[in-house]
Image (cartoon, rainbow, N blue to C red):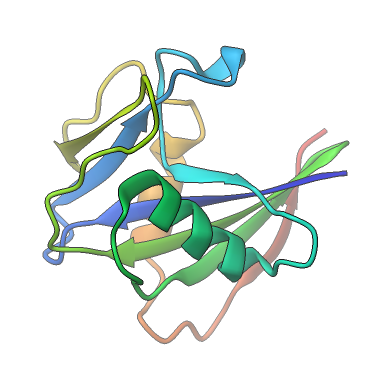
Length: 137
């Protein structure tokens, strides 16, 4: 099973969200997504999220809050949210980070990010609940 992480990064006032214009994998090329990637052997999801964040942006640690794990037939994606006041730039070749108002997202966004953004915003700083799983057929 392929295990991955995806982080949704908000500005401190939560009026804007940072999204990565993807160049790869092929099915995501030209679409906006959160920051993330594969969980490496021996990593926890939060460790993978922090590593991906540093690799993609070069930024220091932020407080990642897990809000959902999505399961499919042969994959598992753990989603996190965080806040940053930094002006982000992507360190990944061919990929760029853009900041969008929450109420004016681009049309070429990955389909699930449209509903993950409001879900991420509904999670308190100290989560008192967690969606344990959501299965995709």
